[in-house]
Image (tube, rainbow, N blue to C red; front, side):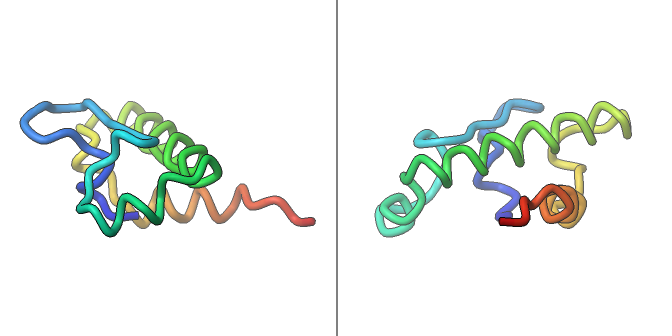
Length: 77
């Protein structure tokens, strides 16, 4: 996860997911798909929970911790 893409500029502890995520024109085309939006929302929810558990801001939550949690939740088809 690109850490800064889900965090709003100039505001603390405000995250954005889905089509309001930050990025340039070329990147926006690749992650406007609904499944990607769902994954961004899940990542943001996990980051928020980790921030509350650690009593820190969203910016201080390690992206690797969020990614590891998401990998552990992957569904086996």
